[in-house]
Amino acid sequence: MSLKICTDELLLDLVPASHIASVTFLSREKAALKVWPQGANVPVNHGSAEEILATHPDLILTDPFMAPSLRPLLAKSGARVVEVPPAESFEQIRAVTRLVAHEVGEEARGEALIARMDVELRELAAHRPKRTLTIAGWGGGGYVPGTGGLFDAMLTAAGARNVERGGYYDVEALIAANPDVLVYGDTYSGTTSLRADQDLHPALLKRYVGRRITYASLYDCGVPESAKVAKQLQSALLAVGP
Image 1 (cartoon, rainbow, N blue to C red):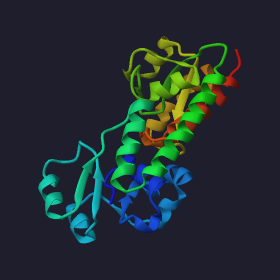
Image 2: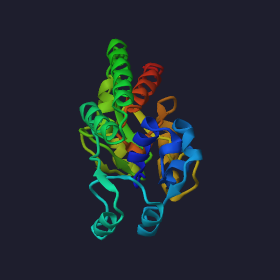
Image 3: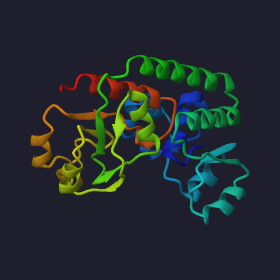
Image 4: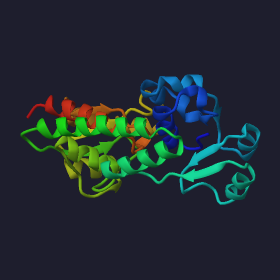
């Protein structure tokens, strides 16, 4: 049983759906199903204690940030509880993949996922763009990921340069930072909201014609598919004009 979207993703990659007690409701969203369609056939949970105790799982995967009040209830479930740390680099992705693979008894599958990721990273290194573009991750309600972290690791692998200062930007601050390209995650693309209005501000649409990229954000989870996303970013960046 997985209580977090990032452990959902690892579990769905490593274990047949018939062996999964449940994953989070987020795994039924359109963005998640594009990468893990098998999630449509797995029961979902909302992380409640009642769901956990009623399910009787053998293993519970979560992260270190769960509510403290949930810990004693998890202990009462009788299940083994594994807190999987977030992965913000490809080295950390290798570590968490091996951790979860070991816990579910799928070490060989875990190594296969890592091997595929490493092949994709070598392909990325072999096709780095001649021009290093400066990128701003936009589309997060004004939040721009700066240097360090998973998004930065994917950009670096793709041969791009991230804006140095992360944090919340308004449209004026983003224009002043003057990145070459805006990169939008696709998790909630097409959703009508004030957040989307800011993300698609007319000033940005005019300024960045042909220089806006959408990528599969994978809910910002560090999983082996992150290398595939970096390849998607690299292909899109290679198509950006001068």
